[in-house]
Length: 120
Image (cartoon, rainbow, N blue to C red; front, side, top):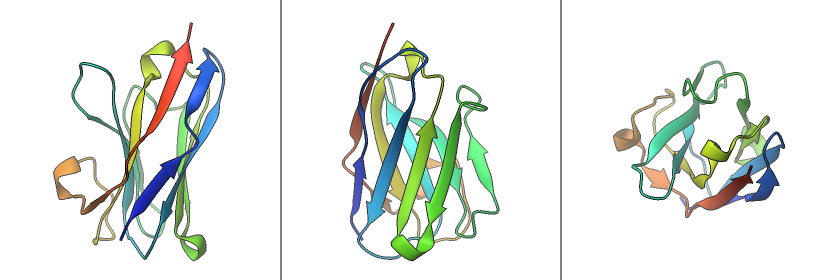
């Protein structure tokens, strides 16, 4: 399965972006992670296969929303009230397991990343 993330770009602080992740085949639980320059990759959000369970990093809770369309093999990350500290390369990831998780080590598939830059 290949994952293709898109939707990144340059936005002013307070603005919004919607990231999309297209999967070439079926994946189950999905997640978004990000890596800022000079920093380690960190968890952003995850969603179970049924979409009944979602997890968010504390830093994005209330501002970001993860969703999915299983019929289209798509996952989305709606990002509102963006801050300069949200600047990073955002990666989507997929699992062969239905359960959502914050643990990056258990994801089986990774996309190539899309750059989000938030200016102050």
